[in-house]
Length: 205
Image 1 (tube, rainbow, N blue to C red):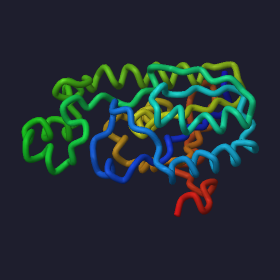
Image 2: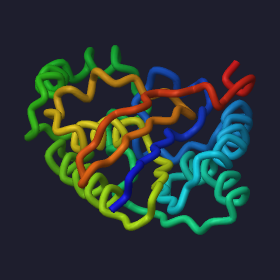
Image 3: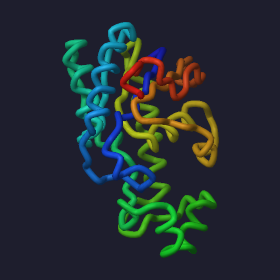
Image 4: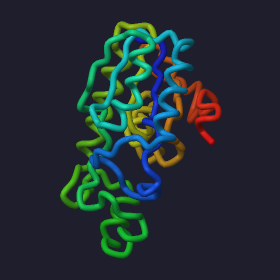
């Protein structure tokens, strides 16, 4: 079983998407995000990564490529690492969604696992996917496992491995390009690093 799990959220995308629901919309990294990806790759030399899993979405693969090239390791692209599908809410701001779908927002914010984003993914289905991710990553036989993925998945995996109810996912701030570290003991997790941005250096400014 793995003894350490490193999770990197994809680097920055265009500012036009700031404050908007971006799940399955396949947006590329912006120039700043490309610089962040290079900074992540440089920092990863000291992470002693044995295995790398990557979301197949463009913003994640673009973040992972410099790292994969630098470490000279192969990556496994995993559909379960994709961000949640927001359906009709994709590209909308929270204010727009609240104005147009107020009753649905209330249900979603109430952590109702039966909630389904209009035209998108069901919360219970997403949580099952996150549990599969957590189990897969924690049970890998590599010493240190890296996953390059998305904020929603990272929050959900934290909850899974720390034995927290999913409603606690809102407590974790996961910014673009950040590193979250979970030390693993018999598949159970201890959160030893959260939302670390130090490795980005000037690429964060």
